[in-house]
Length: 337
Ligand SMILES: C[S@@+](CC[C@H](N)C(=O)[O-])C[C@H]1O[C@@H](n2cnc3c(N)ncnc32)[C@H](O)[C@@H]1O
View 1 (cartoon, rainbow, N blue to C red):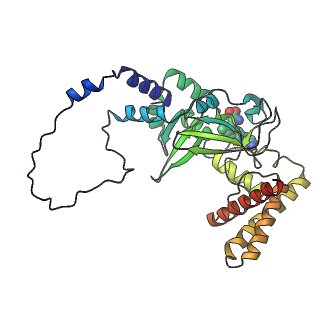
View 2 (view 1 turned 90 degrees about the vertical axis):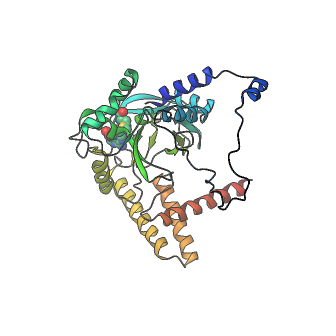
View 3 (view 1 turned 135 degrees about the vertical axis):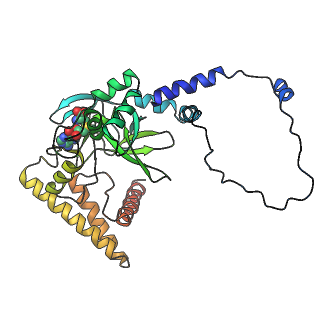
């Protein structure tokens, strides 16, 4: 069931609840009877954790979910979702999203609910069954999304699974270890760049994917995110990874389509970033050396025009860089104040 339908159900539920006066309530409150004896209890009562998840019957699940979703979004989220500051235009990569005005660093461009959330590894029949549960309008929105025609995993898929593979995000749901495919129809128009100007982040409290500008973006500039963390990969490695995961025949982002000399310089920077990351991982007790390496990574990223937080093979290196970058930004701000 789509989130829109769920929200409609939620508002129906709220509207049909008849308010009662406190007097009516107390007079109709069921009275508790005590059946138990007054002797001292022999066992300590068991207590559930305060955040335990209730056991909900299957028939009530959609209604409970609708109520939770309807109360977890703000007007700002809805405004951002219905009119993001971009227009969709044809590009050499199919459609793309282009800023309709100057966008500020850190600005939230959209907070969008998924059109569908489907399990991984669906068969053709299962995907069709999920698709048929969507409303006519939702099916039309889904079918308008693009389908990669290139090589790779999507090549032999039926239409529904190919659209899902081209546009879906695989997200692990917090605390569950379960990964599912989420399709966000507006965000789906944003193309990949190896030096993106936006970054995406899933907000599971509101069940919305949020996209932020990570650099100031001039009006009419194409908006981009990175589909895979590829900062430590050369152009050839990135092309291979994107083809394997998404089936693009080749990445047409500005970093990959720069002149051969620029690509060579970019590859050299990314190789050095990889090597420095490895040095941070292995040189844990050499604090001074680690700071020197992190600062060199920062300079190389800046030269590369890469504004996202880089992801290294080792999570501890990504975290170390994130802390360093945060401290660097703070020292810049304090220097300005
Ligand atoms: C989620 S869709 C992005 C929007 C899509 N271009 C459209 O027309 O709706 C992903 C597909 O767009 C294309 N694409 C996205 N980024 C690209 C890039 N950097 N280079 C080439 N094709 C790209 C690929 O065909 C990819 O499978």
